[in-house]
Length: 350
Ligand SMILES: Nc1ncnc2c1ncn2[C@@H]1O[C@H](COP(=O)(O)OP(=O)(O)OP(=O)(O)O)[C@@H](O)[C@H]1O
Ligand SMILES: [Mg+2]
Image (tube, rainbow, N blue to C red; front, top):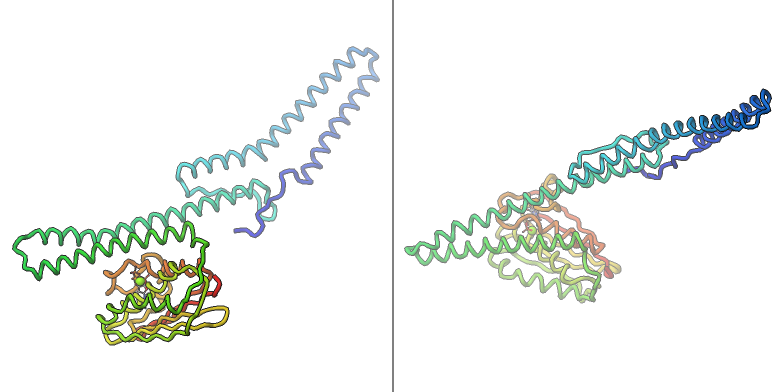
């Protein structure tokens, strides 16, 4: 986008000078014609008629000049702008207008044309995002729905053993949980994108809040045989939005556990750094390659194909949105095969 989009007014100094010269010329011609006629006749009636005819001819010349000027300066750009707005209104966002002057000589029509081009390309981008989003959501919905349908059919069989029945029921429960997690994450994301985080803030004992979030993973950590190490400064207090911060801790914790194999370690630390707090989630899991690392905050992006069935790739997109909204920072460091560490920095008064 141009740094200064304000164009020059259509009424330029040169235009004013031309207009002035035309009027002066016409008046001069009128005076000369009057003097010429008055010299040759003393018939006042004839002089009046000839002067009237001359005024009509000169006015007609002025009107024609103005019509030509308007056609070139106003009608042409306005009709191309009109045509473009009609195309945009009917959903054709490919339309682009060519400004009539070089940038240094832009007039207001050129600025309108460039603004229209920007508007059309922004609409085109959001259309692409919308289509991508819909195809991603449909894809993510299809898989658990297919599981639910086929396992529900299997469960309908009366001759099933109780172990199989139990196994299929668990599969049904986990597929429907995946669906409900997907929908709740989409709703949270769209709320964050459209409204941001509500301005209400509370004083939070972050040390306690973080412990509580981590405690909910206790069973899973045991089940996966992972060692958990916590190193928290005591009674770290911040003013923030507890429910949104919980989204962050839950996503980072669930990722650390999900991507760390049995026998691995997950460490969480909380440090009070005066104006800010620093929370680090470190694991000894599979790590993230440089290529994958560049995309992990995108919606629906999942780098590790072996865990595709767990989650939908929305966790980090949500986490980043929350941190950005709270004015904080999230960074990631990782080494493939060795582990990953996510660092969150938050102002105590966000
Ligand atoms: N701790 C980690 N170790 C290794 N890879 C990770 C880690 N955290 C995230 N990733 C990579 O980043 C991708 C995106 O993470 P994100 O949390 O957004 O999605 P997800 O965990 O796959 O799904 P969801 O969060 O929706 O359950 C993951 O699929 C994985 O490839
Ligand atoms: Mg995740």
